[in-house]
Length: 396
Image (cartoon, rainbow, N blue to C red):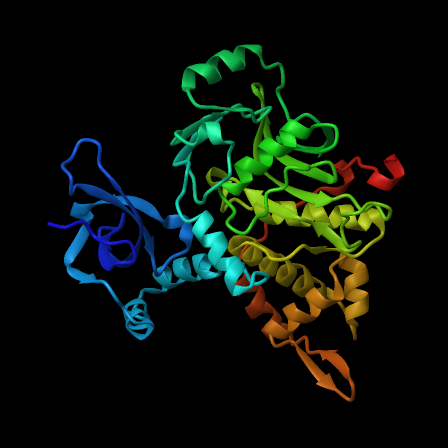
């Protein structure tokens, strides 16, 4: 049989044992097979690109092959009845986060990053499947797996190289100042200007799990806040957020209200409350700076979900406890959340009305309880008494 063409749409058996609609993105000949033996890189049209993968011919239902599917047909296929759990999984993975790109730039981005170049990484005690393409240096083009030192984030092609490196690496935590410790959790502030290689390696690593992220090779103007779980072997990275240092005289600087540029919780640590902890931490830093904060856009799909959950929970907790009227400005002063984010959150919850030229918050206790229940549990609490930190400008 002739190999399938790039662009072919077909049903493919996924890890749940069911067949799902896919589009063939790329193909490559199998080394051990005949001239027509290929494997195919496919995109599951129901899901986010992080689930794209190489599959063998036997996973494809060849009776369902369609070379030219019009979009209405695809809508029919992806509009099949789903369980609530399946729908939640798709909702969580379907927002792409490329709103800032025009059509030509989006096509260029997707063409350049269409095939994952690294399949798995080893980081500490975890082997992690990657989600997206990351532009590692050309000498790593032939590497499907990479081995990271979990402390300095140097990466190698072979396990033996990592083992040799670990005997010489004297780091047991990120190369920065420990600004928070509570129980086994620590936060380190790493200055990109003082630790360029670490900052660049962190960006390479993060890009494997963030589709929308722009990779900055110049990390001089970034501060990285690296969250770790600590034990007797050292401090093991759980996730991080970065922010651009606000320097009025610099050519490239953050709008003063941005308190976060990029956020990532590594896959083994997701769904444990660390994402919301990182968000809460960024706002605690904003409070210490005496400023309101907002994340840089676009947010990744999971980042947006975490922020919506955080804003909802923080605002509803205040509204529930507060007696009498409260304004958006007062909410912003109390939480360091930007007024526009507060307004958007309350509008999405239908808790705000526009009367006589001004916004009025409607805080019915039963409605607040219902929304709080829907928002789910909060993340880990930031114990502000354990935060020992001076804003960057004051450090300077």
